[in-house]
Amino acid sequence: MEVRIAKKRKSGWQDSCCPERQKSEGLKMLVKYIIKVFLYLILAVMTLIRWLLKIPMMLGNILLYFLSIIFILTGVLSYGFALESARECGRMIIIGMAFGAIPDFVPFWGKSLKTLVAKLLSMTNE
Image (cartoon, rainbow, N blue to C red; front, side, top):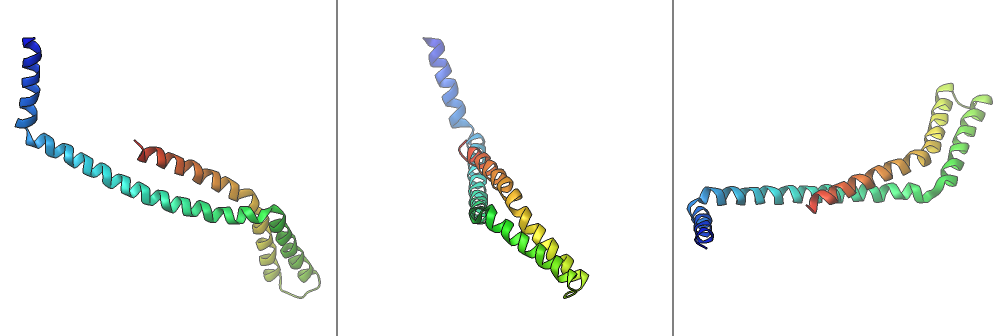
């Protein structure tokens, strides 16, 4: 029983005697809250980006592939009938290819952002 009382006295004496320790713990808590605030801001931005990436995903593959075909055919036919220069036709074909690539890359970016947001949430909940 005397050992328990001595341990209690010893731990109580250390807590009341060392205000530096209490200050450092308070500083650690302050830094932790500041980091959490920044993580929540980053989380909000990442969520907005993810929502904006969902818009092209909702348009669907068919619409974007249709636009791709229209741009590519316009570029090829404009060059074939000598309506535009080769440079302008090449730009149209590149734009058509970009429209064709959007449905392939947007889901990957959405999944990557979703994973990153989940990791940020797990960091803020610690």
